[in-house]
Image 1 (cartoon, rainbow, N blue to C red):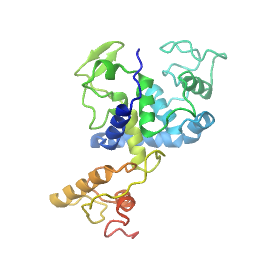
Image 2: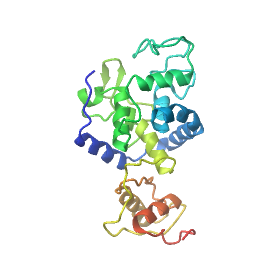
Image 3: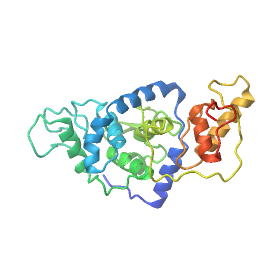
Image 4: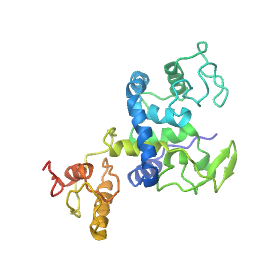
Length: 268
């Protein structure tokens, strides 16, 4: 399949999509459960990623997408470690004899794609590599649908997917959480960060609401809290869940932008 060039326009698109990504509330508990499992295996992902210069969370979300976090399956495509891969890419790893360790397989899967310390691991570069890992079919042949491999379970995806190799359906819906959405929630929880994202500086006066850990019963106040969270998300490197509850993480993000915590925050 043809490869898509990583142009400045594509870089801007990835950043815009990630910064405007809103996680589907109905799927939040599923997403957080997946992320918790990924976090519990951070050390194992780091054991592969650190020597190669690859962020652990890139490997983690690939492992979830390709193998449902099964450490008995190949990172390439989820085939069992007891033999070389059968699905595309077939015949991997080429070196060594099965059964392979998960670490051997993962290292081979990443190396065959030329990924390493020289790869652009900025936020946009990471999303580019994730989309390329699954293939460019959506971007090249179905431009009206953003790939669910990245955006399923968010406001950026509704329906449309490949239901088999080369077989497309406009009405089919992905049941798997997208990789970018998993990363977005990890960023909202302050579990990961992207070093290329600059520290925010305020360029306009924000709408200020009081600190709260529960949803306001006043629709106006609730909408103001959501509007403030959207405003915070407009700054590079700030990722806040838009839920209308201006609690600890929202207050911390507000301090990064405005220099002070929200009124009523007990930490202030």
